[in-house]
Image (cartoon, rainbow, N blue to C red; front, top):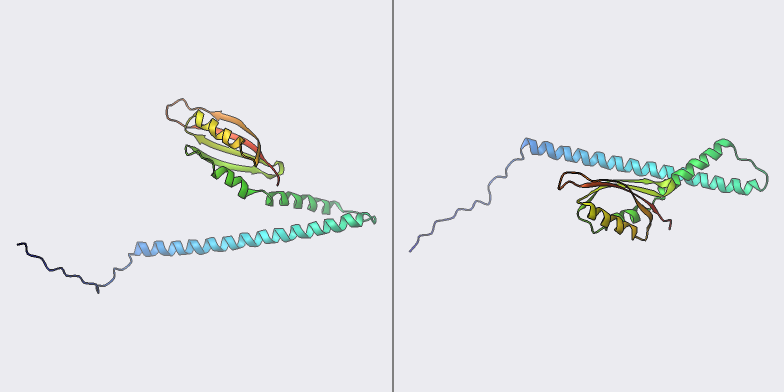
Length: 179
């Protein structure tokens, strides 16, 4: 018959101390989190300020358009402010959620997007990416052309690598619809 050894469990042992490197890493992470929170709050504040300036300019434009009937004139400085506000409004109204949903829902696991660059004034989207091979790139292009939110999806350039197993780099331009 085998003999059993006594197991000695010590549940009241002292906790290990956090090593100095771990403590320093924890403090750096906490500081980075606080800094990120402050930057986010600042960005939200800036956006809110830009939005209020835009709304003030829109209301002023509304007043001027009604006053124009009475003979009031708009100064060139005000006209420039109106143009700037319209440009900012166009950038703020970029349908990011819809565009990113289209790009993220692509069933292509062998396609990597390297950059997504919008041109809000022309409602254009420039994509730069890499695909496993030429057929995968063309499948991705066909997928984007079939999406209801995108129009005039065109392959503007591609580069086929001569080495086997190298990705195909491509650039696609698309226009998005206003909704």
